[in-house]
Image 1: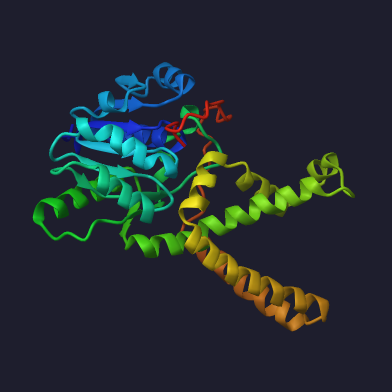
Image 2 (image 1 turned 90 degrees about the horizontal axis):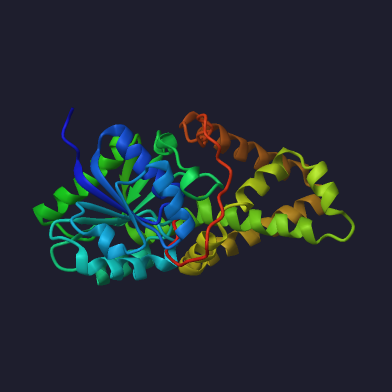
Length: 320
């Protein structure tokens, strides 16, 4: 058997992404020992019951001691707190990374917390489902998905080697890796992920508030489009609250553009401008076909396990 890329992996927050990292890394033989820290007693109990880790604890410093790779998989606004808790126990040469959907504020928080000699390489795997908790993870989650790394502006050989080691780790889990500036990442994700989630939350909320349509009718007669919105809107509320508050500038910029385009669409409907509607719908269909052709359909998490959402406490460092 080939030598593991990282003899010890520590995952802070063992929800969907954190548990999938562990499952994928073990399946690929990319890690040796695995330690998990999670604020939720229920989550720790499930991690232990599932046999995901060699050590399970509520103490972050205890989990990261001696770790070669530390993955922070907590809500975005808890990243700084988790990094500060880990800092005293991080060994020189360790790589500290994360899986947050926002990179600007997270990169700053990790850089401020990490001691000298620790390599900070923020990251974001663009993968997931609406499920949460340790039971929700699966090793195939990152297959054919993109992972974006936003390295610091450093050119020393030791740091560049650390970045490459982390890229190799994600590739071992089946992902493709892209490197990107943190600010650009946040703008791109505001378009491709954050705004769609905001729209989903809003449209499902609007349907729930309609007095003329009962909730039972909404559930009974939901067409495919609305069902897709409800799936997205079922995503972890703590995680997405933190995403919008942490990436508000980019989200508001894209939301303003979206609002302008929506007003133009409203005018086209009002004035019967079918040619404009047809042109828009044709362009958007081609984008959909391109996404499918690029293999960026979400993988189905049904690999013989029950992926029902598991209850979790609202502790700040509970995994997402």
